[in-house]
Each structure stands twice: as C-alpha cells, then as structure tokens.
Length: 417
Image 1: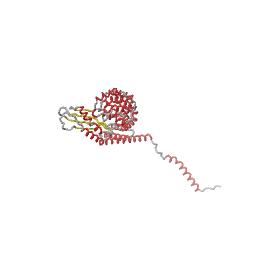
Image 2: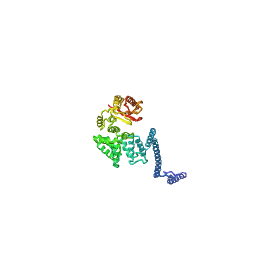
Image 3: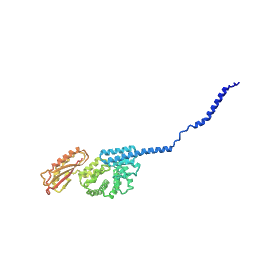
Image 4: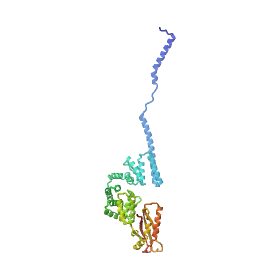
C-alpha cells in the first residue's frame, strides 16, 4: 500500500528534477567551451629546421675553408714544422667533414710535393671517388689531380693500379711524353718488358728529353737488345757528361733501386768502370730478386775489377807525363784500396792538384765521397782521411807548362766484394 507524500517532500523532489534538467541541457555548451590545441603546420616547421641546419652547415663550411686557407699559408712558409702544422690543419678539416674535396685535394698535393707517396695516393683516391673531374685552378705547379694520383700510385709501388690509371689518361692524351714514360716505368716494374719498351719508344720519339732516351735504352738492355741500347747510351751520355738529369735530387725512380741500374749503364757507356761497378753493386744489394738481377750481374762480370791508375782524368792547362803518373799512382793502389775495403758500398773521387812554378809547395790533395750506402758522416770521415793520407804519399812526376798553369789528376776508388 503506497504511502502518501507530504507537501514538503513533493517540493523537494520537484526541485531535484528541475536541477537535473538544467544540468543536462547545459553540458553540450560547456563541452564546446573547451578549445582544442591548434593543429601543427609541419611544412612551416620543416622550413624552419631547414634554415637552421643550413646556417649550421654554412658556418661549418666557412670553418673548414678557413682551416684549408691557413694550411696553405703554413705550407708555403716552407719550414718542416710549418708543413707539419699545415697537414694537421687539413686533418682537422677532414675530421669535421670527411667529404671535403678541397681538403682532400690539398692534403694530396702537399703529400705529393713532400714525396709521401702512399699518403698522397690515399688522399687523391678519396677525392677522385667524390669528383673525378675536380682540379685546382689556382696556378699551382703539377695541379692536375689525375696525373698526380697516377704518379703517387706509381711511386708508392702500387704498379697495377698505376698502369690502369695511366692507360685511362693516355686514352685522352695519346702522345703525352710524361704519361708514356711513367707508364713504361710501371710496366717494367712488374716485368711486362715488351709493353714497357713500346711505351718508352713512344715517349722518346715525341721528345728529345735525356731521361726518355735513357729509359728506352734501359728497357732495350733488359730485353738483351744490347747493341741498340749501347748505341743510344753512347750518344746520350755525350749530351750530359755529368749525368745531371739522372742524378738530380728531384728525379724519382720507380722502383727506387732502378736509379742504380740507370746510372750503372750510363757510366759504363762513358767507360767509367768504377762508378758503374758501384751502382750495379748497389742495385743488386737493394734488389737481389729483381727480374733484372741477372742482367746486372752480367754487367758486373763484364766490368771486372777496375785498376785505379787505368782510369785517370786530367783537368787543366799544364801537363804530367801520363805514363809516369799512372806508375806513381799504381804504387799506392793497395794503400788506397785498403781505405774502403770491408766497408759498405763506397765510391770516392780523389783529386791531386798542382801549379807550375810552385814545385816547392806540396800538391793539393782532396778526397770526397761521391756516393755511399752509408749516410752517416762520422762513419765516412775515416775513409776520407785515409784516402787523403794515402794520396799524399804518391810521388807525383814533374809538372810542365807555362808558369801559373795548373793541372788536377782525378781518379775513383770503389769498394767491391
């Protein structure tokens, strides 16, 4: 049975119902009053980030360019300390940006000028991988990166890579003397003598350069075309009696020991047995397993053991009786030879000079080391002192000629097995 509600209860129930209705009707409006965060404009953000990184990278490039510029100033200053600092600057640039072709180019160029062949080959190879057509246009000597890369490969002993690189370059510059000459050296270094001879032939046909002709003669000698080689050698050594082109400090050989084979042949063509003997001995000591070692031994056998008095060179306007002079020197030959016996390879030149009218004055005697396997001065000085002492004991014949005229007698002393 339902209980009847009092008027107060009725009023309370009605109030609650109205309040609930008001709340329900106001909820959508209230929900709409809360705004969502604005949508992100990703295009605008990307542009902002792109500008930021462009500024960062531009600043980085400017820093790298400053390092390169400073490195070049240091290098041109010339001292070894400054050159080391230049390499350090380029290393910093490459640590910051390994793909900097400018830094790689200048690193390769500096190492090329410093004859650091493996290092310059590495730097130029990396630059070549980035941009094969890159080249400096700032007027530096030997600035062609491709030519320098090939030379670095050659002198670093990477002959097969050098051969391929030179062949690519020669496809564009067929008659280049320098490229054919270097290709010939690389081919000869790996024993491809027929191809090397062809390359040297092209080089010497295109140029009268002493080095190209001698290289061709060396290849002919190694191919045992001896008469042809000798004809070229005898003609060429008359053009450069001091062999300055072969002995120049900036002359680089590939492989390095070939310097002694070239000089041995050239001195033999001048009939200077002692220097020829020295250089063939040095070649064999440095390259005993060379493909051309047998030819070097053939040359040594042909030279025999030279007698000091037999190879005598007189310079000046006065005169000595040559037979008497030879006889006087021969008497001291054992003493002179003892000065270099048992030592590592040594080639010495002894000079004895005198002036007509000064017979009361002793002859001026000087010995100097022309070449040696040993570079330490303190180890060579005893040999020089010994040679000069022995030479002063030579009883020189009377000098003839106008008063005041002079004459210098020169001869070689060489150590040999």
